[in-house]
Amino acid sequence: MASTHTKNHDYHIIDPSPWPFLAGIGAFLMAFGGIAWMRAMNSDSFELLGFDFAQAKYWVFAIGLLIVLYVMYAWWSDTVKEAHEGHHTRVVSLHLRYGMMMFIASELMFFVAWFWAFFDASLFPGDAVQVARSEFTGGNWPPQGLEVINPFHLPLYNTIILLLSGTTLTWAHHALLHNDRKGLVWGLTVTVLLGALFSYVQFYEYQHAPFEFSGSIYGATFFMATGFHGFHVLVGTIFLLVCLFRALAGHFTPKQHFGLEAAAWYWHFVDAVWLFLFIFIYVWGSWGAPIAAH
Image (cartoon, rainbow, N blue to C red; front, side):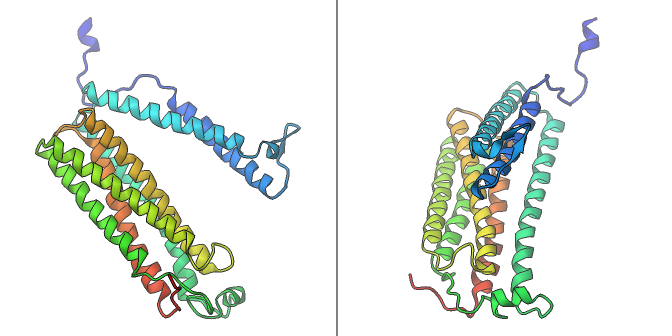
């Protein structure tokens, strides 16, 4: 009788979990609350069932965000527990990698949208068919009278920071493969510090930018592309910080370390996107425009 319940496959049948349902609730509250919040910012109402949710402002969104963050913590904690219990077989690990690959592919298409918007505006600034665009740019790119950020000052500095962080993360990964726990911890520590330094430099750059988000299509495309990349750097830094805490707790082995591997893939993807941002938006996109004084 017991033999009928013996596991004879490489797949892991997970136990019933509340996290997908709670994640859906949290995501719905974030979307619903975000709409209500934006309506409140414009002094509009957002009535449903006789109640004006715009009066709640950001509270509905905040509740949804807290639910999503808790689900992320709890769901990934369960995944880590499953790994320690030996449920991540070769087949399960392969599918986890496929999932991460598809996630990065979706992130790539997300950035393609912002690059598309930037190139659509920059390659055809004086399109006679689109008169409104010509009025915004003066028929030139960057738009006439706009001062730009010196690409070979803070942006170049941040490029060096990210390239160094990719190197230190590779050091940490190879240290783990050779069972060098000290090298793993130091490599992750330096990578996290470099990620935090990148975010600080970008925040400083935004504070001293000679243009704003509104007022020019250059500013809108610039801040959307670089801002979302900055958000991804922040998420990646938190991802690596979690990996550092797990490494200090004795997690990861040379044969089983998908969490660190996924974080490394994500970080290298962020590095690659930044190189495209630096080359096309900072250097090529500002070519010939007056450089703002530091």
